[in-house]
Image (cartoon, rainbow, N blue to C red; front, side):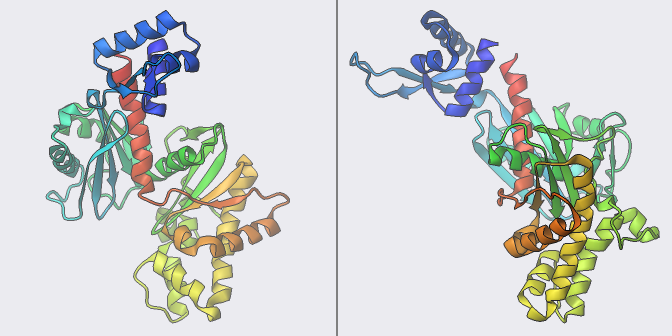
Length: 372
């Protein structure tokens, strides 16, 4: 247990002396010294120079995690592209790779192709990876090893998908996780607040959600908790099309926003472009209020059920809509609810899905490397 505590402290602080370890852990001087010696002999830590000269005139030896003892990979799987990032065990990025034109249209086989490219760039092989976390735009049922709500990923929706991926990667430690859940992990880390309960609404080309309860992701019994596209707020429809895509998605998703933009005379190519055009058009103020009200109707149901500390708006629509969209949604929530929680914009702007996937992958890799 002491070993893991010290290793985690080295991850947090970067480098520490024996005296630092004693001060942070309360261990005795001999125990702290023996522990660092043992970790150095095992190859998990290495000397990293000297600290400031102390009262006795001697500079203390510093130690840090040996970054080469393990590696973690994060992969963001989307219908149009696959991006991979590899970090050493300390969390430093050593390689990134992204492909939009892929060699195998079946899908899962592309993972080995992209990961092999990223590993080659880092001077590694896939066998050197201690953890691989795949972000998928769907709900992964661990018990059935099945990906649901992912019709837009051909070749991925069959039982045994996780085992198939592990075999194609030489038996690597592979985990699948919903993409919006990973954004929630990134937001949790960035906020620095422990034990928080929040709901994250992802508004982009698609609609998604993630539940963080008392500081832990809530995935549900089949991995489908937070599938906000399937909320049923007032005004939503349940015909054949909207049943498959989700009623809330039909109300506030890409098709709905692009149609609102088209009705206002704007020719747009993306959902983010649609909200940007509507916000910039004074004559479209009523349409903006209408879409904000739709978001609020969906969120009101979630808030009534879980009573979160706050709501987070994430995704390109939230980023482009910014504080104007946030304020409009918040105003409607205040009208709908007796006590609405704060509504915040996401703070992780750069590749939040990959960021969350790497946080989870590093957690898995460190558990494997530091406990063996």
